[in-house]
Length: 283
Image 1 (cartoon, rainbow, N blue to C red):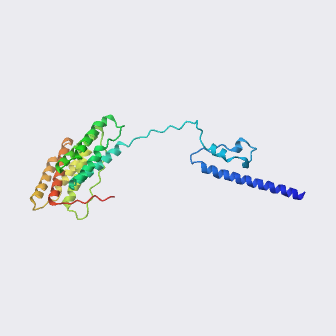
Image 2 (cartoon, helix red, strand yellow; image 1 turned 90 degrees about the vertical axis):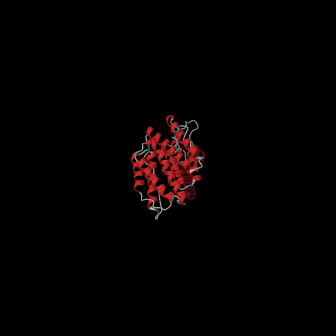
Image 3 (cartoon, one colour; image 1 turned 135 degrees about the vertical axis):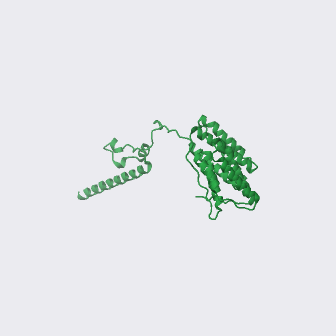
């Protein structure tokens, strides 16, 4: 009799241990199936208090974790297209690349940057009243992508700046996104001053900003004189100072042409003396 009782107790202990193993395995499997945002499935024991852990079929747990096909899918929030600021900053970076390429005498790089602006149609969801200004920018950029001389390139860059300024005057301009010209040590201080001046003039044209424009002209006037026995270089230096005096008080409508003249003068002088500008280092 004692042997029979011991046998029954061993069977009961074995069954209870197996039940705990099954329950533990079910919890592990359930945790693997559920994501961090899923609702837990209904408990088998809550539905039937008499059911044992060992009798709960695994497929029932897996199916409980899957949402009902009849449940409606949650509505997706409207997704905004890239913002106007995103497009403007992208175009601004392209126009800075056009300006630097032009001053460095690299027309191929200028044309590539102009083409990037010309082909960018922004978004089909663009506000209708923005469209004429975007079209004006793209038209000038398209012309810039086919230029064959620094003079025509500078003229188209000035037109792009004017188109940007017209839009900013109408709808409000952005904050200043200008990254200062980075120059290596040992650069001629006159060239440093001219680089700073063109950055400020471009701000003054595009944003538009009266203070940036006036500051750029002042930098040109205060820059150390270009002392050179090369007649063309001396003439270019005098011409820049004349442009600075004439253009200091220019209104927004006049700035594009004046800026084009400044950039053309710089590019022509660099070409005359064989100046090679180093690319701006990556941050």
